View 1 (spheres, rainbow, N blue to C red):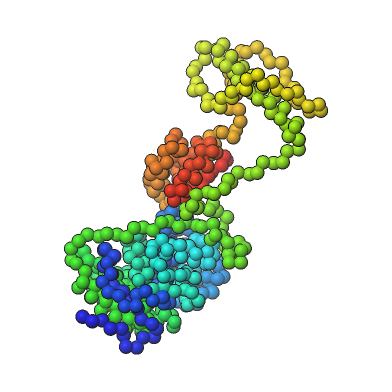
View 2: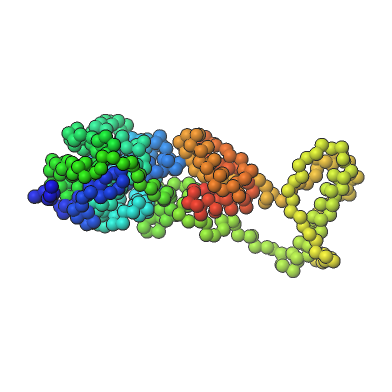
Length: 474
């Protein structure tokens, strides 16, 4: 059967049909032409929202404060007010079911701090999915210069929504949904009600785009996705999509298993996302730890050494003297241990062995330097056991840790920590796995590390594209 475009298109026409189980393309028409996607954009906005929840950036119960920018978006909208606080789950429902522009913008700002920063994350995620001809400028899809996509790219995105986050896919088939401030109705309820097996995904309309739709339907073990750009009306677009879905079910094999698409690399919050286009802090950017998932740390985060008020010539003999004192202290500790054999055995502290240089005598301390005097030492007694120094400095103390994400449940956090420990045994062996419950979720932490161990562990995990940041002593 030969398919022809509708006779009176309001905008350039494009279409694609894909076997969702395997990703095999069954039909194309202008599928690589860059056109206005309209509200099909919200599939990516929602995908990133699901990803952010999965990776502990926020939860579905996170209260989002609506900005003036979000509240001022034109219809279709939920009717949010500036300063209003609303749970993320209601924004997600409004964007998926009603295609609310204000809800989509609020989602983007809640995740990335500003809509511009969120658009950059959308583009990184699109690239990771293989959407090679898509460029996003906003979270809602209203016409904007350079905000373009293709029928092929939107079909790829729809397939990822279905298979990467199946736990949320039912949102796209709800005829109505509770959006917190009221009940909203689905923009595609006609096709959902009339086409056998239809269960989503997303509609879109602007004057520049025409009537767009990415639709999916399942019959038995077969699933087909059809995409149309540039319909002249809701009715004609739905008729064309139904025709394309029929074509897909005829061409797709009835047997065979599912080869789900590989989940794209987690893009997270890039460092550039916190800077607006004018190189100033992005509006609404939150003061939180940045999780760099795309590259390893490239420079030391340790503070610079404070400038010394003593000249190097004066410091050198002092350092030599301190080294001599350390050696004497180690000898005293060993002698105390030798005269108290009846004391309970304790694990020997880990110390750094300082090998004195042969025949090096400390230089005389410079004139004018006053050092604190030590009182005469009493003879070693059992009471001295409690005074034995087991650590010469606090820099190596195991008071540091790392965080590998925030999750919606304790089970999820523990599962991620176990997986991380198995991946990075070199630096995390012996670390204490600890889940801390907070108002926004469950933090997965490894504790009991030195600063150097925590820094090395984070750099190694980030090199494997695993989110991580250091936790200092409290």
